[in-house]
Image (cartoon, rainbow, N blue to C red):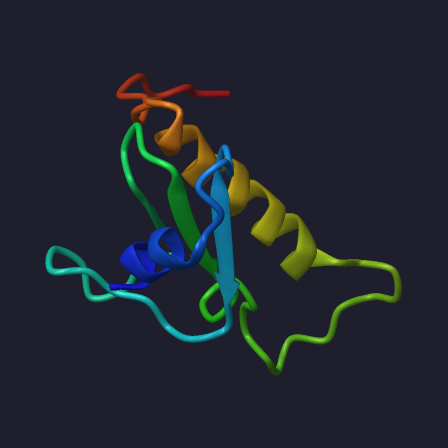
Length: 93
């Protein structure tokens, strides 16, 4: 529903649309998701709700984990709009 609304309310000439919310997201398959995208489509949405981490954890000054996580999730979801799938190859370091 969120992706449909983003699409309905966007400019027809927009290349991609990214919605950002602080509410918890889910889909019919998973009880929660960090984001969702139209595969090879125009719209994606990401949520900061589960990316915040443990609210009791005190972070050192200048450490912006939420912003970093949101940036990575936004890139991930926008990748799906460009037709990129999840990689099935595990990298062991």
